[in-house]
Length: 323
Image: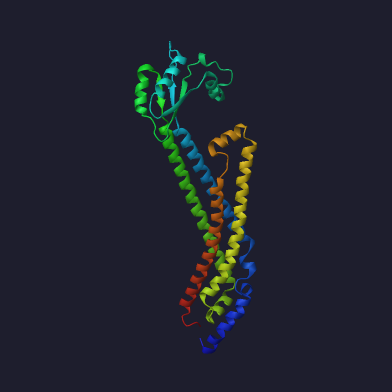
């Protein structure tokens, strides 16, 4: 490069800096609807994934807490067995153990309601070999010795069995952890797809303006200056699409929560609430949505910057003399 060209480089950079958006990164090539829609869709799906993971984690935590607070004594009917007396005996034995905070006998009407979905209404449970239950409330911080409790029940009530729900808790925790792991993996894949989309978009923008970029670079414009132009445009693009996707995700969560509240007494809503709670992701979930929006916008800008710098480095390698 000649001295005259070198002297002209600063002035050239100044002229281009005054109208850099139009000359280096044309508006129609970068802030296009296609890329904005891609980023919005990826952000929307990422936020939905985060919200689903949050719902599963919170619901599993509620289930675990509820299960760990209770144990169940089941007494099977037997000829000659006074069931009501047996229930009171089981409650008395359980209350005598340290760590038990209370007991509750499930009466006939409550037992009939539990069986109603399967056997219909109007049941006379005295005519059926239906086990009866005693709910034992336990201290989570200092649970009782369940083995000793089983040993205490057996001599007086041979048909009684104690279920501390440990198996269900272990399965629930394993299911929740697996779901969270899958959700995080899906989230990483979506973010990776967003990065690749930005790389292709940046390459496309540079290919359409390669002659401008090469001239600017070879007359003295630094790689950081050119990359900053792309970074600013892609930051705006990423923020535009990410905010749109984040808002759509928030609206979806609010709609599901509203639907759950409006249909709280229906069987469908009861089943959905049992599985996913009230569809409210809470403050932590909304903070997570905001963080994903910022993360995707930042990743979009950073990816475009790295892509441009890499491209110019390759250009210097192919043309070491600047010719």
